[in-house]
Image 1 (cartoon, rainbow, N blue to C red):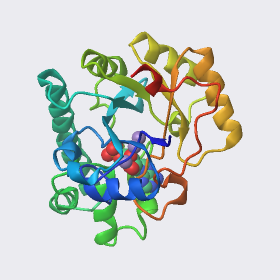
Image 2 (image 1 turned 135 degrees about the vertical axis):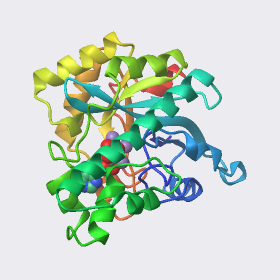
Image 3 (image 1 turned 60 degrees about the horizontal axis):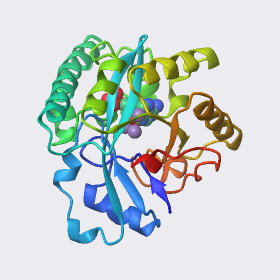
Amino acid sequence: MKYDLHSHSTASDGALSPNALIARAIAADVDVLAITDHDTLAAYREIDDSALGALTLIPGTELSTQWQKNNVHIVGLNVPLECTAFADAIASQQRSRIERATIIADKLAKKGFVDILPGVLEKAGKGSIGRPHFAQQLLEIGAVKSLDEAFKKYLGNGKIGDVKQIWPQLDEVVGWIRDAGGSAVLAHPDKYHLTRSKLHRLTDDFIAAGGEAIEVVSGKQDKVRTRELAKLSIEKNLLASCGSDFHQPGKFWAELGHHSPLPQECTPVWDRW
Ligand code: AMP
Ligand code: MN
Ligand code: MN
Ligand code: MN
């Protein structure tokens, strides 16, 4: 069975509609897919159930949090689509995204890029507004030559558009997922560029908050690193998850269903479902 439990659609910063994402997952022989858009469950309202065939969909979302000045992402899997408390939590994340967008726009205006918010909002469409939409707009107005440059200069870690104090604390967000009956998964542990000891502290705090699993495999990943993360999951008694973090076609390191399977010694998060 092939599991891809981390992917994005146009409901956040992905390029494919939820139904196109599902078609691509089926073509890639994925058996179980979670669409985990940033701070939203909106993809699940667009899905054409008749096109699923044998594919199993696991309701999910990727929630933005703050941990010790880091922007840490927590994937919630098997979360309820009809739960008032969880829907309220998602709504507050959406408000934070809009508030953050106005802050980022103000900061960019001070750099001379005035009035870019309307174009950014247009790019986000009905989806969760995020930094990639700012990057697209900066590219469109000729402020940068590539999306990568937009992140390197203005939006990436430590740059002016990296506004993270808006997000709720990690333990609060893990609590939302747990209270809703979902599984909280620490997303892409390598993306935070933490030292070994800091990653251990992060996992300890995550577990203390009720976190259940860690992404041992995130996209195309070095085999040695996968073994290290498998070891960490076992040492910390965490379940293991895997996913591509697919956003768009053409990125071989994050292609839907193309990541390696979980190492044998891990206990998969789906074993508890
Ligand atoms: P946000 O959710 O608005 O905080 O934006 C974070 C998203 O930006 C990530 O989920 C990635 O999809 C994207 N991203 C982060 N860093 C880069 C980068 N260097 N180049 C392109 N996209 C990036
Ligand atoms: Mn993203
Ligand atoms: Mn993420
Ligand atoms: Mn993601």
